[in-house]
Each structure stands twice: as structure tokens, then as C-alpha cells.
Image (cartoon, rainbow, N blue to C red; front, side, top):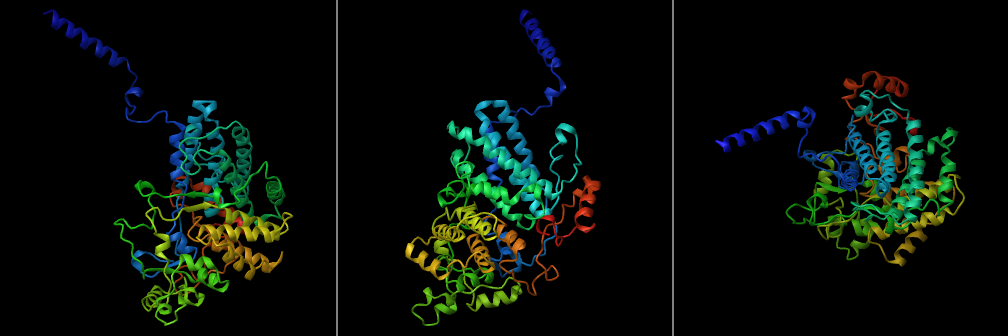
Length: 502
């Protein structure tokens, strides 16, 4: 009897305690991570910021052509895209929240959060034009789920300031030997992150070359000069040792090299995917030793009977992006188009690292700025260094071969011909790297000239942007239509000319 009374008392107390809990507490998911360590959020951001090589982006960059319609095409028929980067920006807000909760030891994450904000906002404004920024991400705090659109000018101004602030914030942290955890790019080395931030700022500034003379408040030329002329304050990625690149491995499926076959069986010929003529034509004209490493001669050249075919640039051919896929397939079957060199690209399951921003680009961007008269300096020196770092990345390490190439393609000087050389070499250095940067640079400069032909699904035009996400027409109608009207006279399509490139 006494046991029954005790059990009844326990049940009564349990019921009483349970009833005292707030309903909001009962709604919480016991499996949810409420206070995530900053390093976990940071790693998640790193996982979601890269662009895959061997993708449609690089066919649109005209590095490759796809000859089978079942797998896709390079017809430039895109229209709209999405605002997926706002999810990443929400994660940046979470990183800031968790870093502030931890305190002083997490200060490096707050500095890098400024870089991430700039990185993702720049990515979207480069694609679309005007985007929400100043009022974006206010939904959870201010219940503003219909943010206004900031002008592209203002987005870039805010992003450039974020990058400058991030550099300044990192300086004392580096001096104090602070590190970040969860970093599989630079292993927590903040000095390398500082080089990335300043190099990314140069990328942003050079992307605004058409606005350098008519927007005094942006100080594009001065900002570029300040960075290049003060390496102590603004260190840069100038050698491959500091490249911001994703190194793949063979043990983690979440970081597997995209080109490596799932069954591990490497095929040394692929008639569906061949090299693009826009890239190959530049490389053969300049007799670029990188081509001999990354590509294979055509089967026609192999069967020609010429014992030296493998070392002759006439043995390499690319397919024209504008040609019909049936035409390209016929050329590939006939052995008239070059494949990539699978022995190089798939020498191991780890493959070749994917550069997001590297030394070749930075050196060539500085050379471009010198050529344009933005900064004083030796454009030829940066031009040569950019090519050298690119050659080394693609496996051309013999100094004699590099010097022979540089001598044969000596910089023409700070003139139009010299600028063309710089931009073509930047294009070559972007091969299967840096996401859409090759397309963005060609959009800005028209160098190299992208091929257009009967396969083009955009009225014989290379698109200049992406139309806004269709969901915005439902959830943010008024602000979206105002942005479209102010930029494109009400026409939201892939051929609009944004402020950045107008």
C-alpha cells in the first residue's frame, strides 16, 4: 500500500513538473543544434562557396563543347536563376551570432564574415544587377520579408567597404597569432585569408572598369592603387602557394573530384566532351605549352603518320561553341576534335585542385590596371608573372619552356594590343577554374570574342545577365518591378545591360 502511495506521488509530481513547462519549450526539437560552434558554421560556408569545374559554366566559358543533347548543351538558352546565395548569407548571420556568443576568441570569424557577405552579394549582383542588400536578411528580426532593391552601384560600394574593413580587422588578429578552426582551405592561417580578401577586392575593382571614370564616389582607381602600392597593409595572392583553391581527396565523398568516375575506371577518350575552339585557337596561335599538357592531339593527327604529331600545335583542334551538336559529334567521331588529357586530369582520384581565386588572375589584373593607366608599375612584369604562375599550375614547370613562350609572346606595351594579350592570357589561366569569371571578363571586355552560331538559342546573342527568380514576382512584387523599371525599362530578361557593364 505504501508503495502504491509513493508511486502515485511520483506520478503527481512528474505531471506537475511537466505542466509547468512552457509550450514553447515543448515545441523545441531536442535533436536541433541550438548553439553551434562557429567553426561548424564556418566549414558549412566553405563547402557552399565553390563552383564545380567540368560543368555547364565552363561550356558557357567556351572551354569545352558537349556533343550529345541528352546531357545538355552550350546554346546560351538560360533565362532565370535563383537567390540561393541568400541562404548562405543567412548562414553568415548565424556565424556572426555564434561568434559574438563565444566572445573574443571567435573574433576572426567576425572579420571573415565580412568577406563572406561581400563574396555572396557580389556573386548575385554580378549575375542579376540590382539586388536586395541593405534590407535583406531582416525577416527574422524586423519581419521585413519584402526588402527593397539596392542599386548595383550601392551594392558594390557596400561590398568594397566590407572587404576593406575585413582586411583592417584581420591585421591585429594576425599579429596576435589568432587562427580559425574548421578551415580546409588555408588550415586556419589568417595571413592567407587576408591575401584572399585583398585579391578579391582587386577582382571586384577591375570588374568595374567601365565605371572607373564616371563614379567618383567609388574611387575605383584610387582603391586599386592604394592596395597595389602598399603590400604591407594589403598583401596579395601573387604566387600559387597562396591560391584559394579546393583540394580534392579520395576518402571523403563530399569532397570527391568531379571528373573522377564513380567506378574508378578512367576512359581515355570521350567523344561527347571535347575542347572548345575559343580556348584552343588562342593556345595554338601563341604555341602555348600548357595545351600540350592538358589536351590530347586529334585522332586524325595521330593517324597522320607524322612521328612528331604530339608536339605540333597543328595537331590540336577545338569545336566551335556555336556549331550544332550534330556537327560537333560528326567532327568528334571523325577524329577531328581534341579531348582533354585524361592522364593529366585523372592521374589520381584527387584530380587537380579547383582554383576559386589564384595568383595568375591577380597578377594579370594588376597588369590590366597598369595598362589602363590606373596604377604605375611594370605591366610586363605582372603579365610575365601571371603567365608563369598559370604555367606552373597546369604542369609546365620547365623554366626554359616558360621563357620560350614569354619571349615569343612578349608584352606589346601599354596599348590596345597589350591589353588584348593580358585579357587573352587571363582567359587561358581561367581554364576549368574560377567559376564564371571567364564569361564575366568576356562580357566586360569582349575579349576573347565568344563564338556564336546556329546552335545559339538566344537570338544570336550571348546573354548578359540572368532574369530575376520567378518567386520574387510573388513575394516581393512591388520592389522587384521598381528595380526592373529603373534598370531595364520594365523588361526582365537575360539580355539586359546592367549598370556594371553599361
